[in-house]
Length: 207
Image (cartoon, rainbow, N blue to C red; front, side):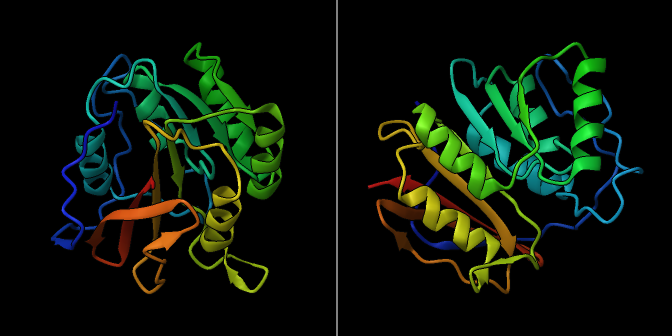
């Protein structure tokens, strides 16, 4: 079961958008460095933002299934993996996928890792009847799909599936603060909104 400090109102945190060094905060992989210099123009999640998110999730994620749908450097999924979660990674860009896959092999970790468009993987998981306790969405901020910001399109598609657990489910959407996400989408209800400089995070749970 996941527990959050949820008060249904928007919070603004004074967070400097530092992006280095990329290190695992706690858990079995604590202190390990995540390479970022070879990732090109991938946007890295600020370390204080990541710390804030995992303070909400907790240090022990054992027994939980975690989907990092747009993994990039892999830092969010790797942090969840370090805390005991069963993690599925997806990185659509081939070069970044290879870097993350090589790192997982170097660390002797064998989670599922995919190199697909997020929309395609959502449909594949639905056919497989996968269910996740935590789904993390952090696609490129400027990417679009079907005339919408990509994050909105992915959320719409997810809301039409049963991928998020009805009992323990939590969808975390990281996006540009300039993008406004709905307070409710299908069965997803936004229970917390937090601003981190130019980045915002919305937390959704099933109704």
